[in-house]
Image (cartoon, rainbow, N blue to C red):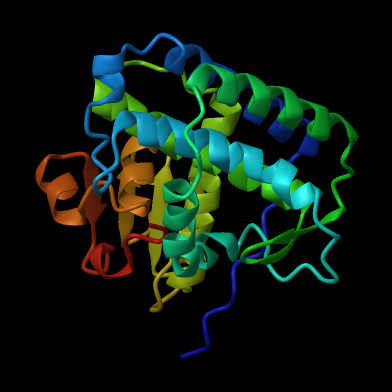
Length: 263
């Protein structure tokens, strides 16, 4: 059997991505600004984090562009959008330490400062500028794509924790779905299973007989938010299938061994 080929890297429109990230951060900032102290103290469903911790983390994730831009440029692009989902796990403890050691700042001030600086940088940083990140060198264009993923995943976390409805920018949502779908294709290369997340993504994955025409014998289909939760470990495969949140047909259409792709 031929060796599975690495999926071709997807391209993202820089202008649309920057606009989507700006819009999603604005949605989160508006929602966080209306939260009461009781709501901020609620569990976020992410380890021991509260909603306040989650809100601060979102601002930190967006503000990391400013921190990276202040460092000397990296020499090479060691991390791409395709490899990024697998590069974050090794620095999880470092991220946790950054939060524990950071002096508390009122969320309103934090979001105002972060949003202003982030928007300024999006206007002036060229997409090919290399950032020196904790995970390695990465272009500004690719890093902005990852901010769309962070914002959408954590907006959904906020909504689940609060029973709320913080809006999801359509372009940001599409970007998040596609990045995580492509990560699955990288983690489980092949062409025996077609994974559909309408209306945003279709990828082929899992080693085995490659489908070429007609109806694929192995198909997995789900909605965007269910896919994001599966891909990030917020939802288990068995639970999603049992709850009819995922349609899976064919003897190879079981992705449990490959999920999550990012945590």
